[in-house]
Length: 261
Image (cartoon, rainbow, N blue to C red; front, side, top):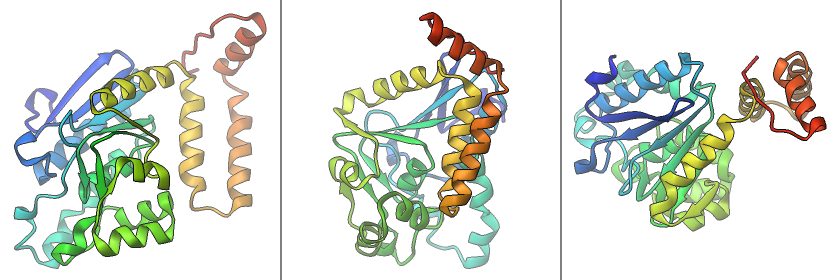
């Protein structure tokens, strides 16, 4: 997909090392239509292959992140049609993005919108943000990772309360249960996400990638296996030029310049 052909997503590079992806269906609170999902997927495929991009900000803008799936496109579907959509393949480029992804969330992050936010590595929430999985209210359940990612983020008892009641929680509640990283005034979410992305982009890219990989994989591994994975990744980084540069800069009391080598 050519970036010039995008209709429902805005893509910018605020600086050469930062990508910003903004959902752009404000008239329907950024409902995740099939077309919008396809555009997000295509953008992340390009980001994943672009070595110059070191961090990504994903946002819905100042009003809403995403209020869920497009119910009009779901109401008449049968199980085989839903199966054939293979949403796991559509969302895979986001899930498997090797660069850190920071969500800047204002307003609604419900259903698929909450699931999309949980695909990210860091969530910056505006004070107005509402997070929830209300699928049970329309006779279904989350199908893009909402049960499993929510469980891993907040634990069984908070997850079950949200999933079985469909009731959303506020940004501050989400921070208290571990679903978001930080809560700020609504007009600061994108700015803070960009500032954080710039900080991460200055870090050694190979170390950033290894940290993300080890944390993501370690979630589902026994502790001893995860610790072994961590040790091996740490050992691997000692073969990089960035490790030599970082330690030399520390000893020489100067700023390090990391090139991803």
